[in-house]
Length: 202
Image (cartoon, rainbow, N blue to C red; front, side, top):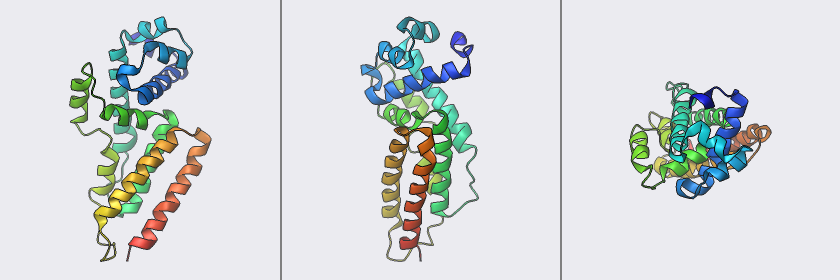
């Protein structure tokens, strides 16, 4: 790892993003070091030189994503905000800022959450048991929110499920667009939240 960390940050990010994308698309078992090397524009031997094994690379990426989520989302979240839609918008903005650095963090974490390969499943179980799975954004947005603003005939749980499904699609879409399109995509998401607020609040 020391050899990899001594690389220029730009070169590190190219390799990281190539690995995140490849693992996210193909899963752990079907991803080969050759696939990652080809995507990163380096030789297979260099990937082994930097990380040793596929498993070490995969676990490095998991821990990197967990650390990034902690510093870029969890620690920056404003818990004093109680309006549900404000919380969702703010959480999504934090996620978007993280994805500007590494576009495939969200899709990689989501794929890792369902990864069941014997070679890595126990390590993943330990990591996700600490609360950094695919549901972290949902917990942050919903826990502590004020649901008294909803109309009496509106079931907040149903609304939360709808928002969760939209958010999942939104995050997947973010991974497929360029950085210049992220802000525009976020504006569309904000419009959706405004529509929910208008129709479901008293």
